Image (cartoon, rainbow, N blue to C red; front, side, top):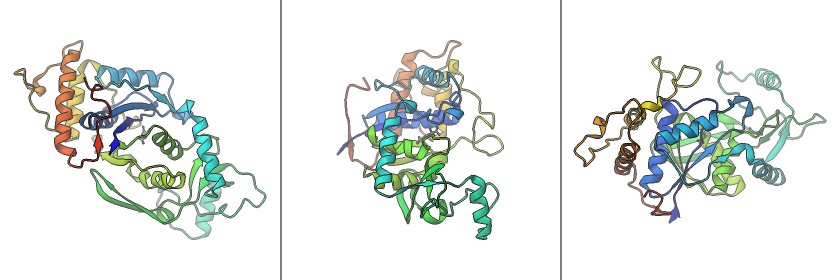
Length: 321
Ligand code: GLU
């Protein structure tokens, strides 16, 4: 049996919105329902995408929503040494290679090879630098992929992806020297001993790449549960670009209840004779005790829905009070 460790890993490119709150709540409830540990990791590795102060604001939002952890918050920007070590390991095992191709080079190679591609579809790297740079300088670093990966997502069920034909050799260190998300997330999940990844469904198709890296680095695979996305009115994924509204912290309970509806949780009536959905947020927000009580009931609802499979046990019975 493994100790349960989960995490919420927001990119500080803006405040949390209704979509990211779903992932935050789900990861929190899964950890709590398992009696495990939940932590927050700020994924600020992609500096150009980060907004100054967004990390502090996200932590404030989580706190106001009662989503708290005694675990220290981790910032990816402070963890380069870990990524560097993994990069070194992948180079010495021969799986990582330097790549001199610009985006234009890749487009040209694909066109020359007659590879049809839908507009905006991901370009599968044609393997130009796989067998050496032929005197050119490396811009980025890629990992050589092989075969496919299969996994069973706790919500989506059986999944599979042919890495060679659908993804191709992927970047682990970008031309601007920034560590790629795929490498950073795998290294951090491993170093932090994460047993369970609970995150939005938009990230599901990254899982086979991450499992491939886990296998190359010889680290354990976490279990995965990808949560439903909150869609904007036009059916598109909610994001800052499509005008996702920041969370109204004076209506914390309402925000959590909306996220619970997306997660199809039946949160039962609290025993104080008031219904959970009837708890009203006042102008200054609900009482912290009400939020805590609601979260406890939501964790029970989560357990009823998702905890059929044993295999983990509580780390610390005291974390959840
Ligand atoms: N930082 C990623 C995001 O905000 C999430 C990464 C993950 O959960 O694996 O979309």
